[in-house]
Image (tube, rainbow, N blue to C red; front, top):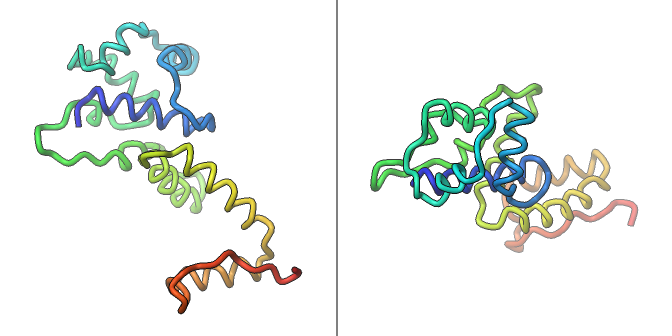
Amino acid sequence: MELAEKLRRLRKAEGMRRGLWRTLTQHEVIRAMRQEIGVSLSQAYLSQLESGKRAHLTSATREALARFYHVHPGYLISDPPGAASEPAQALAPTAAPARPDDAALVALWARLASAPEPARLARLLAQRLDELLRLSSAELAALELRAAHGPSASGAESAPERADG
């Protein structure tokens, strides 16, 4: 994957990570970098990098973008022709999870951020989450058990049934 594509994907993932469910604009990236990490880039420079008109970064810019996007600086280079890129790993935060459950959230976030239509999937997940949040602890345990054993005998998973309704 080329550097330009990586930067565009990271900008999209950052908007998702911030809960906006959309791609950040280049102006929003520039403003946030200045406010959050104290680094100023021009929007024109970022545009040239994302369009591929500039193929290389200065080391200072690479470090700043890596800090802002929470990726390893080594990710911010073009891959050799034919090399497979791992965007899900690159989009995962570099900081260690604060709680044991956070590792699962980071993995889920990386999968969502690298999906073709992350905003659409996020809306669907939010709807399903609302359904799950209404379940009792026993209902959640039963659902986990069903999920661990694969699809039901009918070959399709159905929505969880409520014990009270």
